[in-house]
Image (cartoon, rainbow, N blue to C red; front, side, top):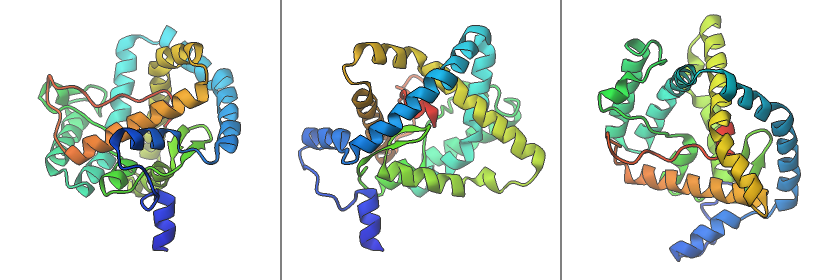
Length: 252
C-alpha cells in the first residue's frame, strides 16, 4: 500500500534535482496525454456551449458589487476547509487568521457577503489538501485532465477527493444549510469562470497549443501554492496576494 500511495502521489518518482529542470519536468509530465487530450476536448465542448456563455452573461448583466458579494460568500464557505489544511501544514498563525476571518465575515460580514476581515488586516488565502500533500513532501505526479474540472495532477486529484470527504461543512446537517451551501458553491464557480474569461480568451487566441498552455499554467500555479504553504508566512495588507485561480483551476 505504501508503494501504491507513493506511485499515486508522485512522491517516489524520479525527477530532476535541478530546480529549473524539475519545474519543466513537472509541467510536461503527461504520460496519458492522448487520453487527457480527449477529455480536454470534451471539457472544451461543455465550456463553449454551456459554462462560458453563462459566465459571459453573468459578467455582462450582474453588477460588479453583486459579483463581489457572491465571490466573498463562496470564499467564506471554504474557510473551515482552509483552516483544517492550515493546521495540517503546521501553519498555525495562518490558521488563526483563517479562523478570525471566518468568524468576522460570517457575522459582521453578513454570512460572508462582505469581506470585513480584509479591512481588519486579516487577508484571505487558499489552502487545500492537494497543497497539504505537497507541503508534506508528495510530488505532483503525472498530469491528469479531470472531466469538467480541467488540468490537475495525481496529487491534487487525491487532495480533491479527500477534500470532498473531509470538508467540515459537509458534516453540518440541515436541508436549508445544505441548499444554501450548494447554491453558494455553484455561484462561486460561475463567478470564478467569469473572472477567468479575459485570461482564457487571450490564451486561446495566442497559444499554439491551448491544452499544453493550460496544463503548464495550472502546474505553475500549483507549484507556487505548495511553495507558499511550505513558507507558511501569513499575507498582510499591502503584501502580494496569493495567486488567483488560473483558467482551469477556476472551474474547481
